Length: 168
Image 1 (cartoon, rainbow, N blue to C red):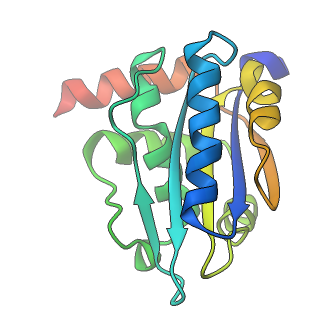
Image 2: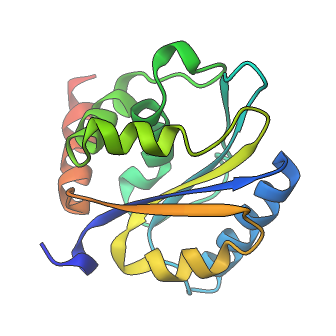
């Protein structure tokens, strides 16, 4: 699988949720203008106690069936269940989480999960590697950002999504 055929995960940190949402809007606008292809994103906050709260915008449409659950699945991979506040990993998201988890080591998942400090907000983006550079350029307000290439083919995630839905 070449770099352009893979999947990536990007985590960016912000001093507050408003700054993370501002970058999220830029990514959504870039997608609407055709500059950014298939992706899913979520704004998350880590409260002072370290609990994660996912603030998902469910109204956006993405290309491909699975992009609507990819960010939720990534939250399930990066953060232990004990840290998840309002976010819930179930059914389809759980199936995709398992597949994404196979694409990174436990140490990589922990590193990404620890990237956002308590009291900060974050933007989590999961997408096809061919859009990684465009998304990284759109995220301009972040204090810091990191991205990891996952050993996961987007077509495989789509297949897992369809299989999980048919099993429900």
